[in-house]
Length: 420
Image 1 (cartoon, rainbow, N blue to C red):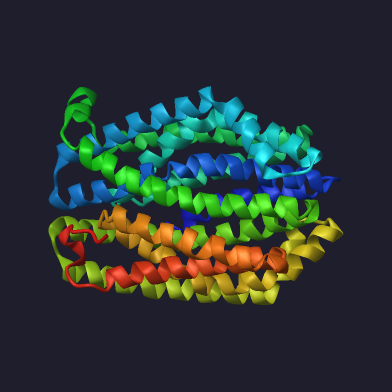
Image 2: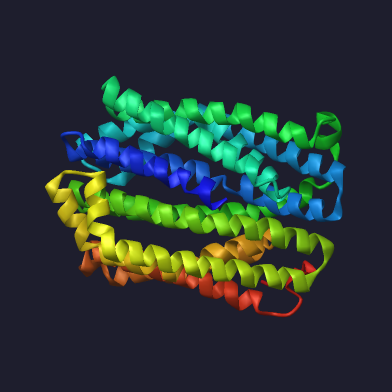
């Protein structure tokens, strides 16, 4: 899962590197704003993967085949409906969001090119989340590896061809992602069919459980909204501070995505393993997997901290040769050195709470971290400029981990009774 997960931010790094070597920082800023808008919409629907993983893992623990099919069918139907709504409403959503970003006219133009091309991948992207969640919940880690590696490798190849070879600039980067998403969907449907050879859509959709699925999805949706709101705010506020700042933040946020997706590889394992233990009602096994995944998370976080402390400036130089952007990015690099050790706990416990299907607790933790820490801390530290943004983001990650740990440490965690 780690090997497959790191291909996702690797794609972002390649996007940034390809666009970052074009002549104008507005191209890089436009990709940063456009990507963040698409990510906000798509990962707002991250509940599709998370809820599917937790519910499928518990059904797998009970060895309930019809329930596995039911969760998959319901989640795919929801994904398709949400994606069609995004495509239908793309113009009011895109124009309003780009205007609210406060970006310069040059950056806004490039952001529009990216967003209105990339949004057509919504049906594939959202259904891929469900397929990924199903495979992880079934503890089929080779399937997700094939999905992510194929999709992102194809994306990288097309990225280089369209942007560097054909000179399509920002539109080329977006179109590469669209094609890769649909290729991934085709592979994902084939992989899932191996687990459910006699799949009956009508029976699966008619199966009871809609209320539980919708309730869990609602809580994770609110959690995802808060998370994406914070990252969207960092990008938008950076755009207000200048083209060089938003471009530099794009470079550093891509590195943060590399960290988060690598640590999420361990969290995905925690989702499947703890979910199966929760389905079997085995709290001892549940706690064992949490401790083991926590040890691995800490080891990888230490490695990332060392990497960015020793080679951070060289890594920035790989992504852009614009002197002003490199200079600004290096000023804020120390935040990236500290973040792996601060953030590893929230990534780990996200996986644990998904496995236990504790959506309400995840929602409450995120709301507290967003509106009790991130925005108040940014407000009082505005005088620090971009440092204030990174301070708020770091404290936000810390509070997520602390609040989830506080809930987890209570006895009877997998009993199904949520707090708050």
